[in-house]
Image (cartoon, rainbow, N blue to C red; front, side, top):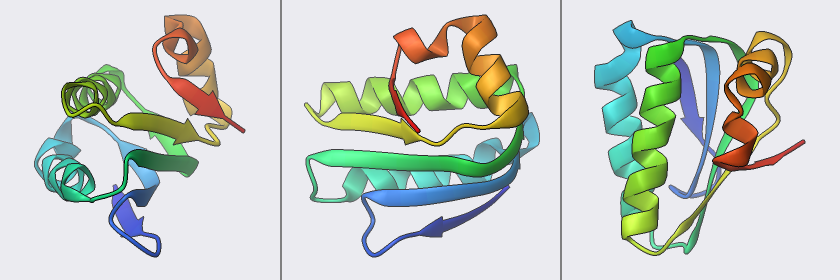
Amino acid sequence: MQYEFNGNDANVSLNGELTFTDHVAFREVASRLLKATDQSLTIDLSKLDFIDSAGLGMLLIVRDEANKANRSLTLRGPKGQVERMFSVTKFNTLFTVVA
């Protein structure tokens, strides 16, 4: 997984694959994202090619932490396999997902 914060720490883009092997790097991304002062947080998934069940779990953890801090979390632009995983697992009912 590669990542890039866009403009500020409240918006991050993920690239490549989000799998169990990325849990340490993703924890750093999540920590930085949750430290942002913005009320609204966004994870852009439009360049993410693959996600496994561990990756889905990592997104759930960020969602839970954002909820605890009374912040909103939006997932933007899932495509291909990531969009199919969201559909199969009904992830779009657990998150705000925008195109």
